[in-house]
Image (cartoon, rainbow, N blue to C red; front, side, top):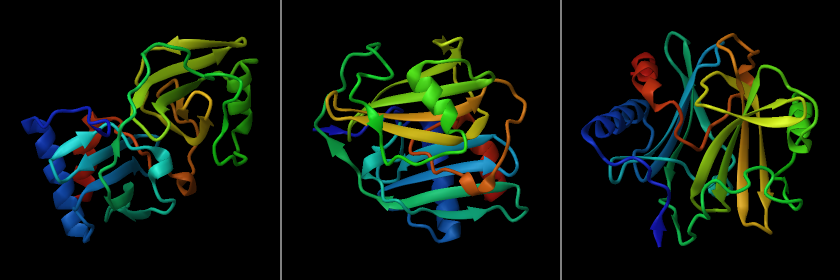
Length: 232
């Protein structure tokens, strides 16, 4: 049995980050038991930071299986209103016994049996339709594809753009989040995909606070101290 996707060792700097999140949660009356998710975003901006913490062993985790998470989450914002935060608290430490397949295999789609998970229509639905079908171009948009074993560990994250009907691999990461995402699942390949949109440039690509998403992966951890300075 493998403890789910712990990516970072409990080094002193990372332990300090976990302790700062513990202090924030304690101040807000939020549970510091077991595992928690925290996503922070600057108001009217695409700058964000997301972190998965295991308070029991002071580690930062790579992520959690999307399908294992309850649907509802809570929110709060900084006193000055500059930062929005979403979180889930007191989540169980998930253990899996599935080993990830080899890296660098066919990323997306895995096969013709892959389909949208909990499908819903989006404002940017056409972007995802084109990306999956590999048709046309979506200028200025980066597709972040996180591939994981279904209900298991993360395999890899790939950044791509759609240009003239071709998916082109890009060097990441990208930090300017566009407020749209879609999940896909394949029972044949036992795989789960999370596809998020990012702006390729530093310019704003639209904002809608009502579509803030609690991200179940650790992203932009280098921005954590900056975001916590608004909230602590």
